[in-house]
Image (cartoon, rainbow, N blue to C red; front, side):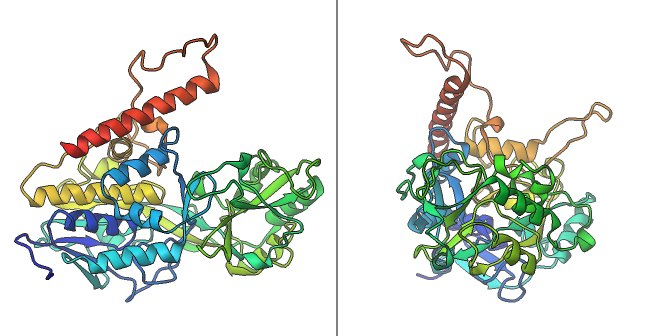
Length: 469
């Protein structure tokens, strides 16, 4: 089948998760796409390959629970919408308790094969250094958090607004065979069984109090990479470097990624660990595990020395050490309309992390929406916006709505990247959640869980209705 259509092509700049998803959604509607990807011509500080939709941080898409977790609801909505990213993730999942984690190479290969094999998608390996020319009447910029400086400067010059930036840190990956399983054990927190999981999907490294304190001391004293020209750029709280968390208080890690709750040491079940480091399977073969929550800006030499203080990792061999890169995003509430179009430039949309969403599926979902919106316009229709009660709509509303927070400067918006969460969804109608029969007290965690269930159910019903409309 040849790559022909009666429609003029839509250009998508960036072959990450958002750009790949946008291109797929457009092409699936019978409209040709030219996908521009600079990797293969020019690399980035974080990517290792030129594959489309390469994962540069964790290999986890987080919770797949569509009944009580907002990201799980987003997973379900994307599947309903024919998402290529979710299809590829499902086909390349690895065990991860209640989460959906993927073999990163298999996932990228699947996305790349689907995009390159689509009869209406042409992949062009080139760097787009400025805003799309005017004769690209429909285009999507999905260059992600690693947007090349020349394009970022062009965006800034066009909008007259400062682009914002924050640091993002990458966790190390360890060769499984180098982990001492006489010290460590397999267990998911609370033995939770998730998609493709067994309840024993994480490797756990226990610490007693003395070991934990020695580890914290080493982290705080560790040699870190300099900020250089990025000095003063704030971190995204959902991806703080491990040593930055340690500096915020000695107990921070023990109540965060190193919390011991829900875990029992199989080698010494009567003694509760003071802290636990978890590693999650990173590839389908199970030969690689990544250190959960251990994003870092420590220099390579310091990483190897400090992380080998962890019981069970004394002889750890690292397939990849952690790293630090800059994420860039625009002030979307100021610059974009509800259909993700740049105000004052009809037909030019933004998608993915550059819009100020955070997370793999969030980025891909905004690419999905941008692709559907652009395709609708190419076909002469007005884009249909998802209801705000859906995960799609809640995230879109956050990105394009922003937040009014300043009393001194009425109307000034404070906009920060955010993962999907139930706090972004509109409140339920009064009376939606009622006390179950036979229950005397209905409050606290039970009531909160019931609200999540109702919010999730409403979202999926409304999403299905929207997609059919």
